Image (cartoon, rainbow, N blue to C red):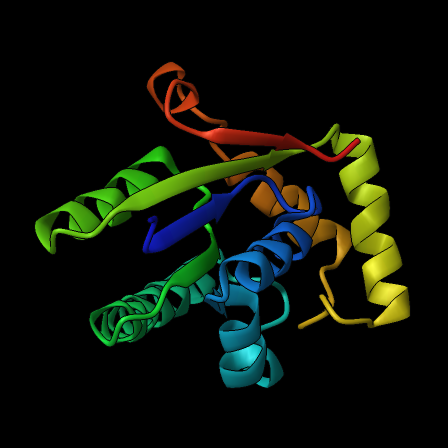
Length: 165
């Protein structure tokens, strides 16, 4: 039985939707970076966007989310980590942490073409529905798009790939 699920992919691919579905199916706790960042730091987001400022706070949230997930799993539960995992190194770091603690972990790669993802982000901004945490401006989309590292060949051998378009 998998204790930790790590959902990753580029913005607008459907990660949050997939992570929520997975959490429900697995009776797991869904821990999403967008929720944490939106509630804790969204009102303070600098304009223009300062990538360093954002990433420092993402790192803080990721450390706290990891400790929360670890407590959940040690208590007998399961967790779905919806942290974006934009970089292969970040995904590797969380897999290594799981391994260090003797936990089973599985990667889930959610992907879709860039133009579809851009449209989804614009629609999410307008609708402000269940997966909305904060507005992603076109400049933010472009900045984060440039940061995402697709699944590596090694990761593709291990992941469940979910194509949403």
